[in-house]
Amino acid sequence: MRRRNGAARSLDYNGDFYHGDSFRSGLREDEGIQKKDEAHANMATATLISPEVRARYEPVIGLEVHVQLLTKSKIFCACSTRFGDPPNSNTCPVCLGLPGALPVLNREAVTMTIKAALGLNCTVNPSSRFARKNYFYPDLPKGYQISQYDQPLAEHGWLEIELDGLAKQIGITRVHLEEDAGKSLHEGFPDSDRMSYIDLNRSGVPLIETVSEPDLRSPEEAYAYLSRLKTLMLYLEVSDCNLEEGSLRCDANVSVRLKGAEKFGTKTEVKNVNSFRFIQKALAYEIDRQIELLEGGGTVTQETRLWDSREQRTFGMRTKEFAHDYRYFPEPDLPPLVVPDEWLEEVRRSLPELPQAKEDRFQSEYGLSKQDAQLLTASRAMADYFERVARESGEPKLSANWILNDLIFLLEKHGKPFGDDPVPAGNLAELVGLVSKGSISGTIAKDVLEEMVLAGRKAGEVIAAKGLEQISDPEKIAAVARGIIAVNSKQVEQYRSGKTATFGWFVGQVMKATRGQANPQVVQEVLKRELGN
Ligand SMILES: [Zn+2]
Image (cartoon, rainbow, N blue to C red):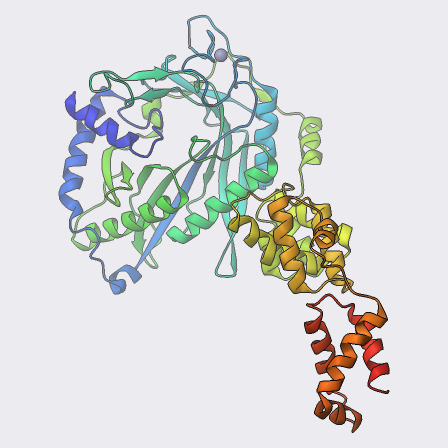
């Protein structure tokens, strides 16, 4: 018992104890712990692979990502899904798993899963089925999880990732809908050394599981895939993908094989990773560990391993279950899930423009570079903001530059989040318009924007308050011009003898003398007159 608690706590280290990922059966528990000890013994030598040896192997990675849906109520009952409420306050007979309670499917959860599936280019099955996945765990009062098994809601899709400028399609095996289990709390109570607590608020919260094909070939590709998947889910507004609250969780299957080999090697599953960077590190570690095992004449055991971010390594938990361990069978309390064409089409019509399409359109419609289009479409909020600024100012490229080069920098500098507060799109459009008309110089505009960020004021107000208005009065400008002409007779002579390039120098001098406030067009007219041409 003592050892078990120890292992459970190490699971908790990353703050997200993923239910049912450990000790699913008493029988396996001891094996699991033993594996852990063996693995510890292996650790010390696990990262001594030379680049030459590593280069002979090819990693094969597939990811299973659980995303918590943004529905207001749970998947099979009307309880709230709100995060952070007092433990066990959002529960009812259905999600407590009391005998006789019957599940009723939440339509919105299905709609959101269809959205995600379409975004992942999947085929949505007109009929799919829920299945019981049986296992024992204290935070799973029913003794089974309602999931989907042999007939998932959607299959056969793909997600495009980009790495080093190269696009690659990663196959999506399936997208299915399931319920979450509760949470076991092993820490934070005065008697945590002896007791574990159960919070069932999460029990019955809807999840979609996206399973990729084993198409990923490096930890970097896995990272790119996860980022892309998260962006997509955020665009579709089906999940907040909050990693800290456990709204997005990832399990990675990884194996290695000699390059050119057809057969996949034995895979391990890495769990308990709560950040994309950690997944990348855990995969890199696990790849080296497997290569070293094989190089030493050993074999890889199919097992579940955990990433310990403190020690920067994975360790074995338990031998991995096979599907037959779960005794799946069709859920008798729910009819088949039927998605008629009309529903599917309705969801299809409701889809927003997706990141890739937006990126392409930003290039063709606004003439932006690929890089700028990529940066601006990283989030839907930023893309929308850009479009509003671009349309209102009529200057898309300039708008992109001001957002990417100046606004983001200033918001970060002053610790403000990106959005319409403190600089609404209309206000930035006004500033961009003033710059494009030459009403204020770029240098002045940067100061104005900083003031806009700090005080939440409009460009015009800042300019008026700081006396930065443009000087358009020809007489005022002429006075400045005459002063410059009077003390620069050499340049005047050059200009008059035909060296017309000197004209630009005079314009620059007048602009400098007026701190950029002179209207450049009036400066040109005045200078031509004053220089006698
Ligand atoms: Zn409930």
